[in-house]
Amino acid sequence: MKAAWYENNGEARDVMVVGDMPCPDVGPGEVKVKIHVSGVNPSDVKSRRARPLGTNRVIPNSDAAGTIEAVGAGVPETRVGQRVWIWNGQFGRALGTSAQYIVLPTAQAVVLPDNTDFDAGACMGIPGLTALEAVHRCGDLAGKTVLIIGAASSVSHYAAQMAVQKGAHVIGTVSSVVKAAHASAAGVSDIINYKTEDVAERIKQLTHGQGVDAIIDMDFSATSQLIHKGALKAHGTVVCFGSNQLGDHAIPFRISLFGSLSYQFFLVYDLSPARRLDALEELNELLAAGKLKHTIGARYPLSDIVAAHEAVEQGSIMGNIVIDLD
Image (cartoon, rainbow, N blue to C red; front, top):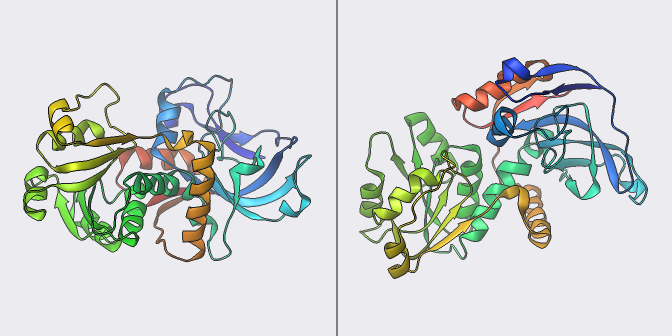
């Protein structure tokens, strides 16, 4: 099968190889999926650059959508032919989704609703599930105000839609006029350009000095400063799934204590089994109902996977970046 892989950490153009390798065999409890579209995410880039390999060769990327071609012992034959989307394709595993085929446990191949194409399916594993879990951890959002950091990002674009559907008023931060328009299309009501505006002060203006009820945060290294400045209402919640700086960051204890603030940190790769099942079901219900808008910002053939990874690193493309395996 055709595949892309690396055998050392480093820059994409220095370590990535595209070539032929043996197609994996399907084992008990597993399915073999012919991949049509592979999704590229920032975590895939970070893994390739710095995460210890733990093996001689890694096929990158965790997200994908495709068709089940074979099943192992214990898996119903009725799964053959199903259109599916994949989660955690390269989490704790060497062979990810930048290949024509992947073999993985049957639970990691989720039936793709008939009204949803492979492009959208390849955006569900990390962007879709992260957005869903972030909104879920905010609690009841009916009538509440939510600040979404980086509202034009692929995760935040989904999170904004989901929060609005749950009755929230959404405020979002962006860095340009073009990104403001993209965020508005997802349902963000108030836009703050963090390049030109004081975010904390603008939040206070928009909330009449009270602050927001919840913050969905993709960069705790910056957002922690907003908490210091009173951007979060008393009894408010911060839901965080990332940080541009992975070192320790000070949480304002006095403000958090006397404001009864809550902090929810999570890693989408590591949801509890019960929560994972609920999230997969809820996300598929949203897909089947046609309630999510999807944005494919750029598409590359497998032979241009270096360009795809570099595009993610540069962060200049709005929407999800995918690799077409067909």
